[in-house]
Image 1 (cartoon, rainbow, N blue to C red):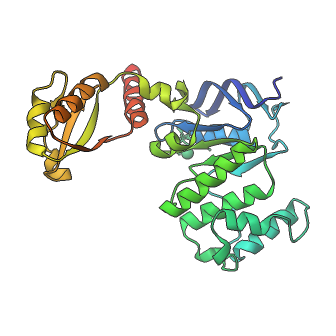
Image 2: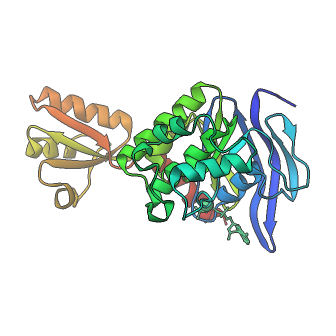
Image 3: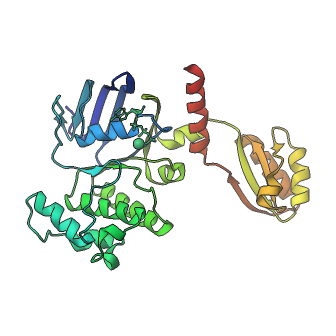
Length: 313
Ligand SMILES: Nc1ncnc2c1ncn2[C@@H]1O[C@H](COP(=O)(O)OP(=O)(O)OP(=O)(O)O)[C@@H](O)[C@H]1O
Ligand SMILES: [Mg+2]
């Protein structure tokens, strides 16, 4: 037993009849860390999060949550909060009443301490007295997070928490998760948004058809030297195009102009060749105004890993 780990899973398997949803999954999540689960549809992310929440039990393997070994009976461990498949809310109650009702169910009285703070933290202060029936997907997600915050969890489990959030909502939720982690709460979340995962998570686990294909810091994955497509904006696109065509290891990607406009040159290169190109451009007296990968390095690595997994099957 390791008390500094919020989650310690070894060789977890979960079957639904013939379907192998999880196949020998290991997972370590330390206190105060935000861990991202990513993977294609059906990879097993929600299944794994459900095990952490005590909504189901594994068919085999060992699972310890907050230092407590989880047995073969379905039960939630104290100190764990979160939701899968969207938060359970009462549509006919207001946001504030929903939080009060959840607190009452947990036996902490009708007006729980922290309700106002939780509503404000997720940006729902203004609509606290509106019925949840009229809430958008993003507003429901925010309220679900507020409900989880009320319990002051030491492990927070969230299935696609950024789903449906507008940019302000995303900023609010990222802020909340960062603060929780700074206070020592472990967060395990799933996401299909690699930019969110890169911004939030210190560690990621990539699942594909129930198996782990990568686990570690996103930077480790991104650093693997691979060619990526970059958009390059300069003071002289024609010159940039000419220089790109003349730099070893750099290829011009056709069709970039149609998609991004004439000012943008799209090139495919690994980092050393890209460095060479930028030096050439600047040496020619052309200014570099923007240089960014078209898809994030994590997304690109993710696609490559899951595609090679497909090939193996
Ligand atoms: N209750 C269930 N009954 C039968 N099969 C299930 C059940 N829950 C999940 N599965 C199967 O287990 C596998 C993993 O599903 P899971 O929902 O965990 O994937 P996911 O990674 O969350 O996918 P998504 O990105 O689409 O949310 C899938 O093949 C799914 O069909
Ligand atoms: Mg899912």
